[in-house]
Length: 574
Image (cartoon, rainbow, N blue to C red; front, top):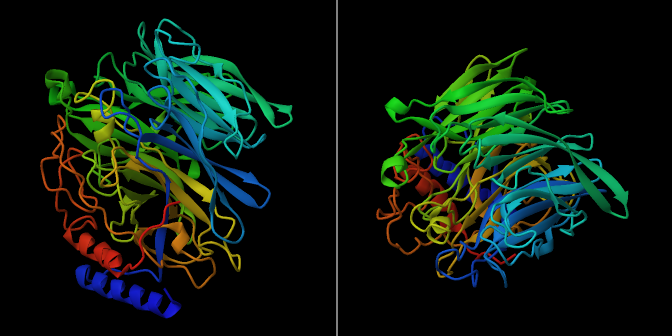
């Protein structure tokens, strides 16, 4: 697409938008979301119990090497020769000029053919001192087919090569211990955590020291271990930090699933795990069928944190079917001995079930926002990323017109995980993750890639292409801190955006996704209804609604659909 035709396209979309949203102010630069198709869903395991959904549970980080940035993602994959599923790693290189390039393609980082959970629930973070990617995961097969799952850590370099031994960091082999999380500080230390279920269910925090052994190798040492939230039957901790000496640790508290107490957060001293204070941030109300669960967290400005919690109706306690979910967003501010809840909003984002948040710089001023990443649990529709800001005077604010991005063509936050997991039809979900503040080396460079974008939010997600058996894995890059005001456009293959300051828009899009075939209904979902091509708000994470103020409704479909109609080039595989 030439610069002139790009201007025509931008103007046409802005004109249609002005009709659909009178009085709205629209941006000057139409910016597509580069979306890498990093693994396809063909031949990705049998279509049966424990066959695996293809690719799922992606997490990302980045490593700086000289002038280049490597975006590294680790995910579970059932596209393997042995075992149920294994860990895989992909690395994408961004330089000061030219196109981003996949430099490590679907590297298998585990090989545990035995067990029911050979490589589960991976989380990753970068140790800045050594430049290594620290991986935490659960497995019952590292040392053969064990009775229970334990939590392990290892390390990768920016090219997905393993550079550390696999080390067990959980404490009790008689319990199932997994569902980890990790956050690395800037001093060679990381704070991690996991859930221990069996006897005295507890969400644990632990400290890690990363030691440089030379020759590109590192060792990982557990320095402390502390039980933080108990009882914690379905804890799944979430961890973040804005300083090296303090870490926020949140997990669900309660004896039951869903938790009858709610979500508890603690402030930890990262030197030794001392709990400085902790409190219930989101309380369950069992008598009202309100159960607060599944926290995700992000660090905001001025020492504040964003905490998302999912409210469940608890329907599955009686029927073994999934109940409804609603998002709750909190902004909390640490005090000397407690957290002050600064604001609380309900029902944000497009997809509630299995959604998650991350935080980073956004817009011209680089003010910190938090974004809600969601995808349809029915497997029909496109994933979305809604960015929200916080102001001490006005509270949490969302602009559904300008700050909502469609981040892929196919999204699935739980359908195939439900169908092809250990207990088909009764449980199984993806665990969405995202990351802000990922630097773009091409920012401001004459031949830089998207040179008006200083940082990205990166949003991994899974979804099934029509005609393939299982889910693909995708990686999308949403503009964060920018030098120009940006307007969301439809996602595009990165190979269709040429570098250079005149190519800030897009030159091609794939065809819009076709609705996936309707399989037998999943308990607790609405997959017998007509799917929406674009994201739609949902009070239960599954139903489609028509919020007239939301881009995901009919107006949004028309707006983004126009961008898709104008596209002439099919997506290339990456």
